[in-house]
Image 1 (spheres, helix red, strand yellow):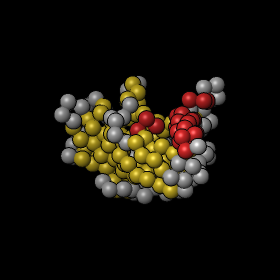
Image 2: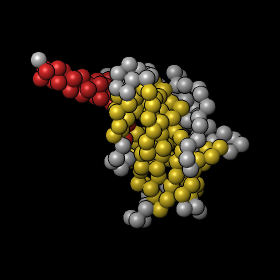
Image 3: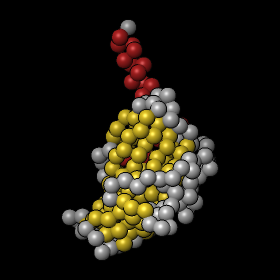
Length: 185
């Protein structure tokens, strides 16, 4: 009886994770996307973002983060939601990487408005730079309990000449995006 419960729990977790990645939605068009200006998609929360550590708000409402003299400008709208999952960009930093590239780190908050646990992992995010889609460096893999939030860092290693990037956030119901600007020292 205990073994059967463990198998059911494992399968449920697997199906929820695959559903969050959109594996079961191959035939359905993306339901929500953000505009290129970084505004939230329909159904996204319209709350005001709270900048995190390393980020500050400027008069225009866009946040900046810095590392070693680099500056990352965030969009005015930083909260993106689809169904019971909400992601908020809390801050960003950039610094030269040892490989001659840029390490761009985004601090994000995942809020689970649903009843069941969900994965908060780096595979939910992609960064488009100059027409190329970059996956994040491995590291973020958290479980967010129902009706709660967790914060974490997602790090991308991108070319040194990156000045503009588009963060893509994948939901089971579609995708949202946020424009970032990177300024060297």
